[in-house]
Length: 219
Image (cartoon, rainbow, N blue to C red; front, side, top):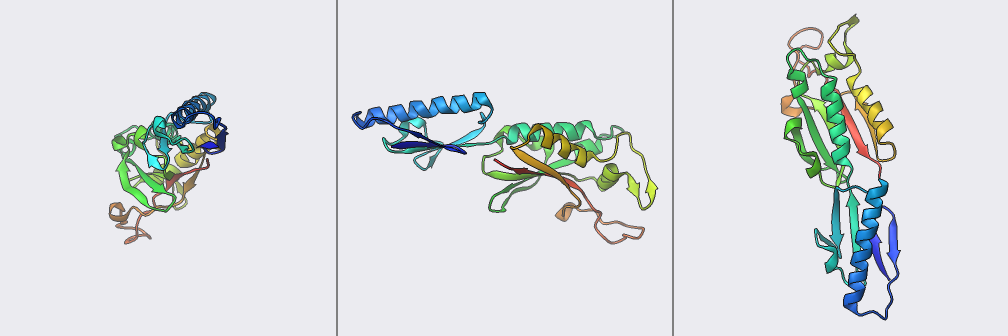
């Protein structure tokens, strides 16, 4: 019995009467067909990692007669492109600084921060690897929270766009990609060396709060 492992496991039963080379060929052919069917149905993605008998990137044809082919699908390219398109479209237009100041952070299941902060224009969505389990999108501008909530103390302030940019982005993502990822607004993220320290007011000397969008993989 040979196997092709996806999110769900698929088993192909191949006749033991066939030669080892023929069994490998049947397994490789079956894997490619199931992959194509899953991509066509939307259950799979064209962006995936292929692992053959434990070797990442190996071709299906190299599988052993009783081997294992694994496809790890990644929907991050589509999700991240949608998210950043929404956020930049909802950004104030006056100077363009806020729109150009979004950044990505990528995390694996082990909690590793793959790239601490990457400006959004430097991110290639199709290059996001399948082992990423969480993505953060924030903004470097010190007035980012003001754009998001449009309230300072008890006073309402206005920008050229509606408030709630991160909550609205999360709702759109959860609606469009239900069952694939879940998104939420995080109240504050630590920008490290990029954080801005307030110079006056009741928060003088403290880091300015910076909200962000957190997207977590479900599949």
